[in-house]
Length: 181
Image (cartoon, rainbow, N blue to C red; front, side):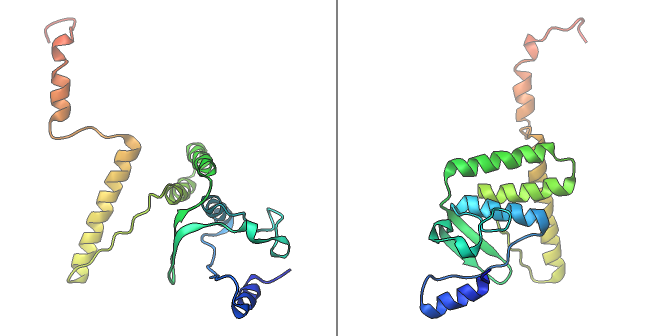
């Protein structure tokens, strides 16, 4: 078979398509699933031994599209993938189903990460401070806030500030008990 890196070098020398090689994220099955997610979100076709498609017998039709890609040393961000919306929604529902069926916390966490990436629910929070202690404390506060937000999303939220009590008090007169107490 043809080495992908060799093809990229030859392509660059010929002045063809602009390409950049990025290491696939994750390990094992998680890597395969993440690559499939990327292919679906960009409208690409996954080229691998499992799919039976190799670099020897593929054309430009296997490529996907996105509005913008940011590649850094350790991170790659694909923004505005041009994949078919129905396929992306189907993949999202598959992942949500897998989360419900999974018993492993590790698997659930990895599935949640994949779901967040597919739905665009990714955010980067940069924390700074004047000293290491201050930065550490700010990171801890942000981590606490994120955990509280995740818990509220998964368990549900009750309105605070007395608004739940006010709402419940409007219906107290309608309730009739067996006795006065």
